[in-house]
Image 1 (cartoon, rainbow, N blue to C red):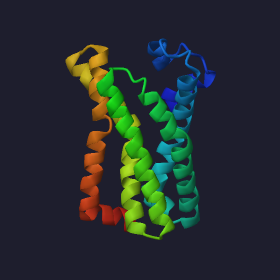
Image 2: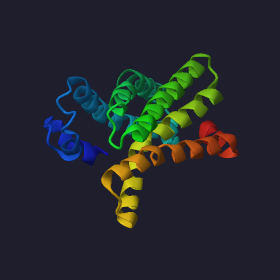
Image 3: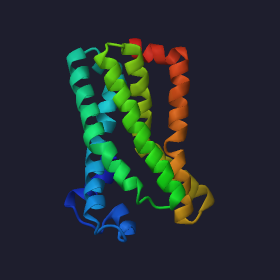
Length: 191
């Protein structure tokens, strides 16, 4: 994701994904949301990984600080920017609905994780963070699905967007729910 995000550091409007967004690139709100989302979400992928990776969890102060940053950046920057972007998603109404639901659930799960930890409900906090991070990982799974679908089926680009808009996060959330409902999540949260 860092490699994918690097071309956007130039703030040029004619690079990578932005080449197919020329119809909306002059919309200041969308463009600002795009750059905020791209740069902050890359941090979320890294920070979220450290929250579940056992060696980092042993440093509880680091876990708390990175967790606070993850929640703050997600709720204040990344998810609201994603919500703005969802209204202009490629693929039409189905894609817009998918990305809007993704953004709203991302905000909801992360906020619930925050409220749970404030009440010192570590299990509920952990379960909602699993859900939140599953949605954060949609940035990766969306691209993986896009690659696989294009490689195998060679569909029209807008058809791909309609599919990956849903495949990027729904399977992730189903896997997260399965993990939460099995002993596996207890192992993750307690180790």
